Image (cartoon, rainbow, N blue to C red; front, side, top):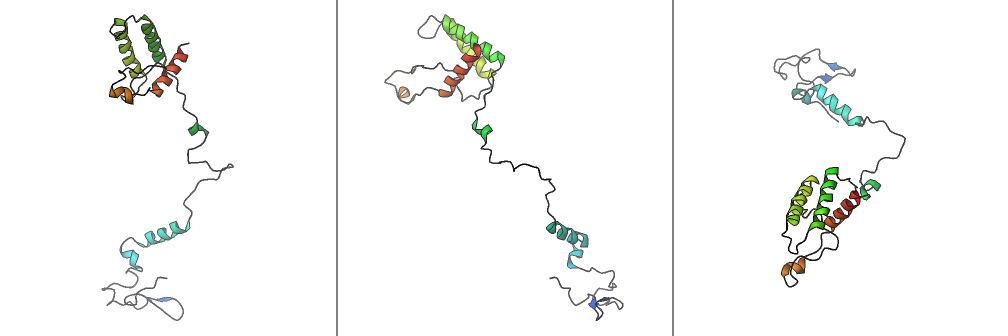
Length: 178
């Protein structure tokens, strides 16, 4: 409990009231008892700040009204988080993919140097941009069952793996073209 300092502070009389009838001018620096600070916090933040701090400690800060349901699960592991987001492709992306399928059917070469192959890669770049994929998601689509493009004896052939995401994107775009 807080107790006032004895020098310069009102002295409690036998009746329980503060005796401020005779000011102690020597301890208060020439001021009367009424005009000097009554609490050490009055010198800095003031009496109102002290009262406010006491009130805040005793009052529940939350003013939210209760609702008639159990609280929400904030761990975000509900059915929405477990269900994969099925984003629809833009119509322009489906049209680009349709052109890519036609160009792949028009290809007549083995080494991918014909005009249809060059145009296929232009359309692939357009599809990548249309799907707003980051640069590390390359290629944008890959036909399922694509063999390794590297010679079997090379070190790249040993570490090459099919791009599962690009193959899944191919399948979803192929379904969207129907």
